[in-house]
Amino acid sequence: MSKAGRLVVLVSGSGTNLQALLDASADPSYGARVVAVGADRDGIEGLVRAARVQIPTFVEKLGDYATRAEWDDAIAAKIAAYEPDLVVSAGFMKILGAPTLDAFPVLNTHPALLPSFPGAHGVRDALAHGVKVTGCTVILADAGVDSGPIIAQEAVPVLPGDDEAVLHERIKTVERRLLVDIVGRMVREGWTVSGRTVRIGNQTGGEST
Image 1: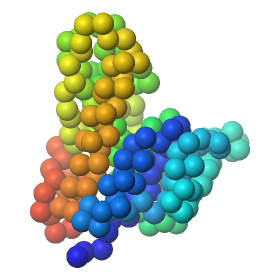
Image 2 (image 1 turned 30 degrees about the horizontal axis):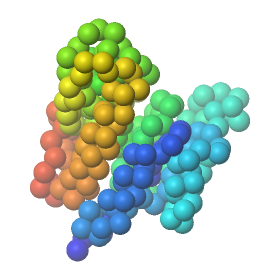
Image 3 (image 1 turned 60 degrees about the vertical axis):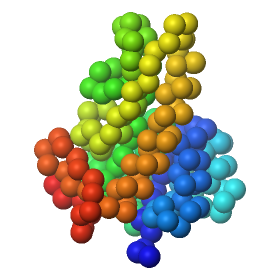
Image 4 (image 1 turned 90 degrees about the vertical axis):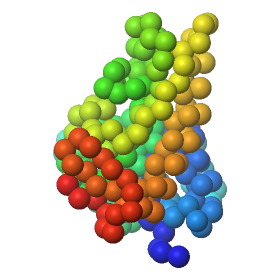
């Protein structure tokens, strides 16, 4: 069996997407393992989840640095120490800077069908717009807000009586499954990027741009 892909997962909260990746990677056939979990704050459940299974953690708080650029350099250095094949932004509430984005492929998820409803309130905005179908998106992160190349999407119907919390929970269920599937396929099969098109499957190398 080929060597498992190395994942660094970044979290800011409860870490349910992280847990889904931890559960999947317990099976050697998944092809990836979480080698470190990073956060931008202390005392969150995501760090507890990592510690529970003896995975190294690190915390880089933006407020500990005089400038955003210094924080960008610091978190990139922490990530680099674990030599990841993929970085997964799993509910991480900071936009990563060039030192990370230029060094590693970074996956991010969003609870809407991009390019519609980007930003921090994708579920709320979709509901307010009156859509009948929303969903989740997995992207390769870039320097913008939810603007990177789309890797995969899955639709979630908006049901009568849905409020933001109920709809978001239903999206999260789909999001976890989609993220686990895409991460596994990327590390097992490789991928290529051409413009805004990401293709997964039977590549001999890793990312090409």
